[in-house]
Image (cartoon, rainbow, N blue to C red; front, side, top):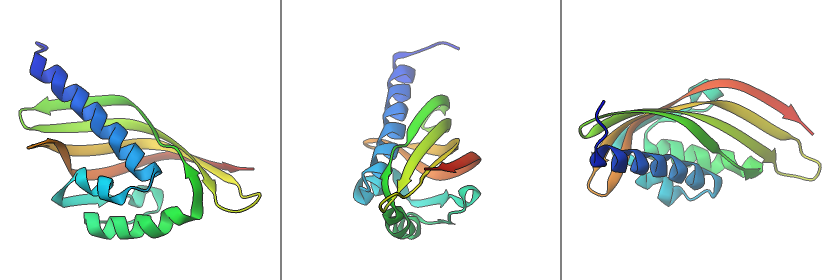
Length: 141
């Protein structure tokens, strides 16, 4: 594979996309979260017990669901990216420690992979499809 400047710029932009995704969820910035997806995107969190649907449906669910946690911290790494012109596929590992709200509430940790089908958009990359592959979970005090 010949590495070009465009490839390096795209890889950096896709890495920034993944960081922004994690930040949007952890800060509960649903306006920012929406900017990461195309208008017709399909999101599937069912592997982790969540829902699947449109961006609006998922944001509505996230707004309610994330209230049960006082803190979350998505860590995204091991990015496997394939770029083909104006499309890309991404598989990135996540580790997500979360703390339930409330005094003496337990913490919850989970891990798996985020899979995205991306398209180049005028001002960056956008996800057309996101699905989770859920790997493990643990709960403790």
